[in-house]
Amino acid sequence: MTAPAQLPFRQSHPLQSPDEVHQLRSQGPIHKVRTPVGDEAWLVIGYPEVRRLMDNKLLGRTHRDPSNAPRSRTSALFGGPIGDFDTEPADHSRMRQLLQPHFSPKHMRTLQPKIEALCSGLLDEMEEHGPPADLLTSLAQPLPVLVICDLLGVPYSDRERFRLWVEDAAFATDDAASVKGLENLLGYGMELVTAKRANPADDVISRLCEEPDLADFEIATLAMQLLFAGHETTMMQIWLHSLLLLSNPAQWQALLADPTLIPKAVEELIRAGMTGGVGVPATHAKTSTSTAWRSGQATWCCWTRDQPITIPTCSMTPIASTSPAPAPSMSDSATACTTASAQRWPDSS
Image (cartoon, rainbow, N blue to C red; front, side, top):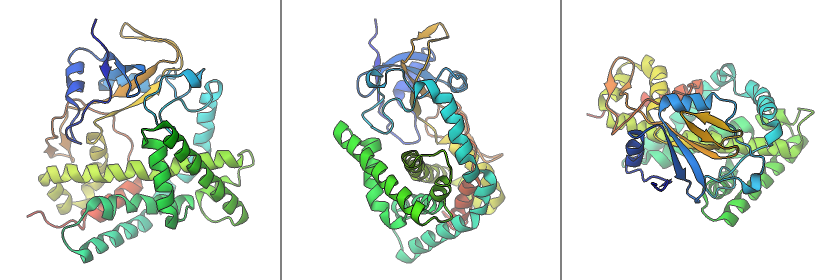
């Protein structure tokens, strides 16, 4: 019997799915693997299978026995189950209802002028500094932090403090360091909640403090989750999308020539930039494609892509791509950032 494949798979290029994914996909959509910490899990490959799983309510982020649940990594923030098994659907609906007004498309559109101004200011600084320019440290890192700090009401001057805690909580390979990072991050969130209750402002944390059914710790937890999600993932997207455009200069030039293509370009870049996957525990027993999931087993969903990048009638040739990935919905704030930056990039010639 073949031993389960060991995660993580080595990725030789940020725009290329690992070779092991291609090999396993040729053998079928579902495979038993071991997570980076040695626990057994199922790897599900391919758009149709992953889409069906993501739409299935039997797949969740909780576990009946969290202390003995399989883990995807050592991270205290993302390595294991999150939430209460018995109330997960209700908790998820409640969270969406609480946060939706603050992140609705209508509200995001009101942020467009501010985001464009922030992006233009960072690009001005890059030009003033002169070549060579580091897109990661000069734009991709500071811009999302500026935006999410302003939106939540987190002092931008604290960015070095929470950046270290976020990195430890999410990415530390040492269990103790990861737990300590999470404790520090949540403690900082509680400091912010206390400050907002004393001096409320026009920001998300202050408005959450007005919710009568939310405890301070719950607000702090939500705020710190948003702080992480609002800057870490966006930073990587800006970097990867820039790399995609630099790898496809014809599409870059098409955006320079016609900025009205940018909204569709953002959607397409998000699709094309997704070469990895995400691990979640299956909350109930489930059978799919003649493979049985036991209750509480980890499931690692991995989508690969084999369609070229198109914006909207031209096509890019992605590097060693494989199969289509689900396209997340585009936010207007992402369009604003891309608009400001695309119009300022110098001609590649």
